[in-house]
Image 1: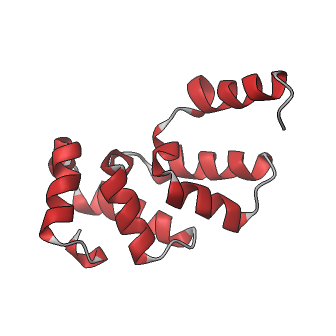
Image 2 (image 1 turned 135 degrees about the vertical axis):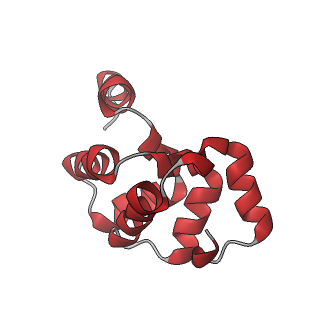
Length: 115
């Protein structure tokens, strides 16, 4: 976390919000998700803010959670910058199930006439 420029308070805040963070493998879990967020075009400060806001996102697999969500955002018509911005501003987006939460929510909005 310090490699991203987090100070002690930010690191403690992330751990306090999601203590199980301490149980995850740095090499197998944490670093791959951080790298995947950077690969989206997020800079260190955006990645840091996302982790402080929603540290649980580090527990997810980039291949099983991040990539499908990014693809779904593209399928909705967002370009890469819009998708990156959405995730940077609302990192919990990556913590929700596509099938059980996000897709039904968007479909409900569409059913109400919102595009």
